[in-house]
Length: 324
Image 1 (tube, rainbow, N blue to C red):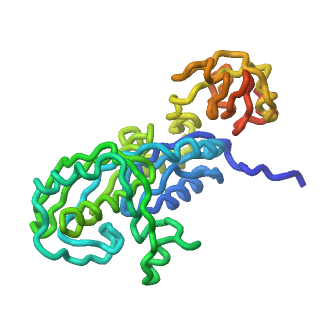
Image 2 (cartoon, rainbow, N blue to C red):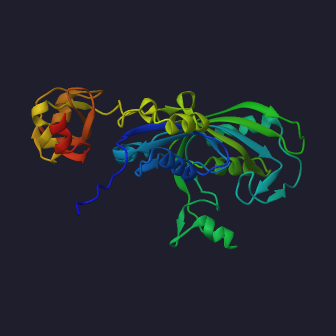
Image 3 (tube, rainbow, N blue to C red):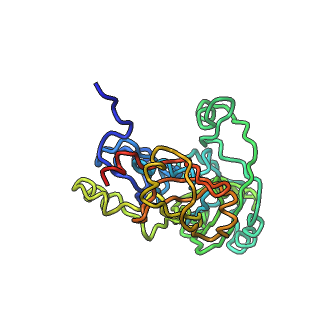
């Protein structure tokens, strides 16, 4: 019996920009896409909590190997922060404790935002997936233990109040637009904003409006995806595996060198290095360069040194080259 291919199933390689609804977990979305397409290798570019919604980039087939290049992508969120109570989970799903004293006024909240702009040290929520002594923090918290969490360096690039809702005067709500670095917890931001104002606060709703180059305006709803994927039209929705990586230099591989790349061989640079950097500098050495074929398709991620290309992640096989 021959070896079973690791990526057995339909050949679908690319990125789906999914608009996750509130309710399902990020893993639920992955399972749905696996079931509808038959593709086994599917991953996502950043977990969203079940109650959160918005951009969830989903990487399929050989494109799953491109997730590494998006782990540091900045994020953008639309957040509803509710004052007047604190939550055990720092969001709407936790057990609430009313704050002592009245909630803050709008002007006080707006004035406090500037303290969170720029680099800051942020402690993750107790109910988070951070590892503490070999366990997830949320596992300890659910068992009644207080996780010992250390602060992490994050950056808030932009923080603006766009709305103030006093429908419930005991629980006023601020609508915030947030632009931040990867790894930032918006639940922690809500919690810390409340503490700074001497009031409890928690995250009432969250929408991720951008994850790096992937935006909510261009994302596909789950309902739309279900219909298109069930009808076998996944290819029409897919972005290229290197979508959103235009900031990385690119080199075109002539057809005669494709089989060498497919075998993971080191080859000489024969074409121009294109991109936002000095080609001469790239030839001296660059860690991440996109190698594309003469038809513009990604064939490998390489690094360069002394005028040679060293394959790091290869997306074609010798059989692909011969069949083409």
